[in-house]
Image (cartoon, rainbow, N blue to C red; front, side, top):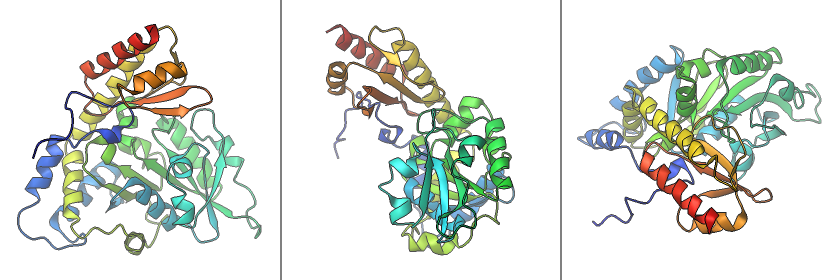
Length: 349
């Protein structure tokens, strides 16, 4: 079959646009021989538990699911009763970009807090952590954060430790949306455990698709006392894969060695290269700190419109003329340089 893509054209819209890493494809092929017990009772899913424990500690247990929205909904539903709510940043993916799934499918009330940089703090949590015992208010139970955040910023281990300690002091649990956790760990040069288990995170949604998998994310319970019923919830929310070995084999290829780190470092390095290449161009204003693989910039509307005909990317804030450029594990220096040159041409036109 003839490939239906231009191998020379890269997009800067999302790291989801990237293909599958060759080592992941090899793992899928290798897992394809013979029969395995379905619904997660296969040898690949069993072995995967050791892989996740190596990264996140002896109490960690992982449940593979199909996508990130499901990982978040299953995690949060397992952490909350029907009358309880989740505190999150107003910019959080669960609030802005999941089609209302946590509320519509999960039945979970979200209590949002505006943030300047996408990051919650103990003080910002307190804006919604009130009304305990008041039957007229959904009861705060979970704080959900993202790392990296939707605005490209990164929580440090110290920030996370302080946030988790404060949440726990209030009787709240902590969920981390880790769709780009690998990028955060690579940016800080720390193990993923430092940003999760060691900091006090209770439940993690671990992302694989953005960092090289064909499909698949995982619910990872770090504190067994924080979530229950995930076996049943995963089925209820239509996330129990009959041929789960093909999800698990991908995660094993990603996490058993350093593929996750190599991929994240490449994406982050290209984000820094892109920021450096466009920072001094007249008419370009970098609007947010570049801490991982996301670059936010403000452009003249006509320039953005013309550039988008050559490279696909998203408008983040139309009122401000702010756009977002994402680099992926397969973004190359040549890709970045071509994009920056095209931007310079459009600015000069």
